[in-house]
Structure formats: structure tokens, C-alpha cells
Length: 229
Image (cartoon, rainbow, N blue to C red; front, side, top):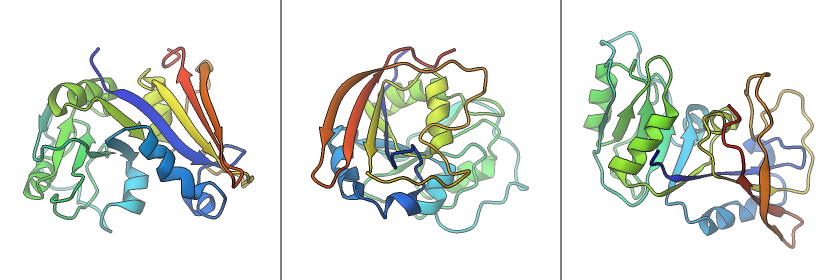
């Protein structure tokens, strides 16, 4: 399949937890964007929860209005070298107008309402619909490569969106910036989370390691066995 080269780039504590309110307090946070820029990924991917916290407006779009769109499609409302890609299965997030340096691109399932797509079009925000009740991430990746000319992108969202791309065999590289601290709080999300118990481990090959003066360590791995299906 034709798809972008996909890197999962995350900052974490030494125990693998990634809560942003925690990582912003530990050494390594200053190197997060430095290392992200070094990966040369003009487009980034976030999940709905991360986007709600960091990018979208407050509130949510009403799901009670309008009929489901019901088909695979896309609309390129902005042409750019890189996009802020957000995975929002049902289409609930609210946005400012799409005239930004790095335009938004929303990926949703085919169950999204027609009215929400009209809303995105009115904001000049690009979108993709693929997959019935759930997003077909493999097909979405093909559309990103073929129709939006995305060659490299970094997943910078939460543990569940990271795990979903990993399980579909779409992650080529894992980039981990490890801060010299321990979280240890019960129930906090890890870098990869939500995989089914019957899934096999994902094996990786260490590509590079770099140590920073503040004690943070940057590890880069090549993913060896795809999604472990």
C-alpha cells in the first residue's frame, strides 16, 4: 500500500507514562519540539482527546442533527506542505476558521453527519471519511499519501491513537524522549495503550540514542513486525 512514513513521537517519564501535566514538569520538555523538528515530519497526527485539550474550541457539535454521510470521501479545502491531522471518529470537535499556517485535516468514520461536514467546509477545514462505525486507518493513510501528498508524518497524540496505528501495522518508527523522572500514578496512560490482550509484542530495532545535558534521553527505534496481526 502507498502510505506516508509514520513516526510515533512521544515524551514520557521513565515508567512510560505520558500525562502532559506531568511531563511539562520534568526535564526533557524543552527538547520535545527540538527532537520533533529533527524528524522532518511536516504533518502531525493527534487523537480527539489531545486535540480537545490543545487545539479545538470548547463544547462539541450536536450529534442529534443531520443524517450520516455514509460513504468514503475527502475534501481538500486547503493545500499545504503539512497538516495538523486530527482523528475524530464521530465528528464532535469545534474549530476556529481554517486559515492557519498549518491547516487542520480531520479524519472521521463514514457515520459522521452531513451537517458536520458542511460545518468543516464552512471553516475551510479539510477532511477524510473512511470506515463504517470505526475509522479505517489503513485506508485513511492511503488517502493522505495519494490525495494530500503527505510523505512523512508524526503521531503525537495519546496512548490509544498510538496503539491503534501500531495495531494496523502503520508505524514505521518509534521516537521516545524519556525524561529522568517517574510518574507512578495508577491508571495514567502509557505511550501505547488499549491494545487487546491477545496481541503479540511489537519488536523493534534500536536506530539511535542521544543523551541531553539535563538527563533526558532520546531513543529512535525501527518497528520490525508491523501491527502484530
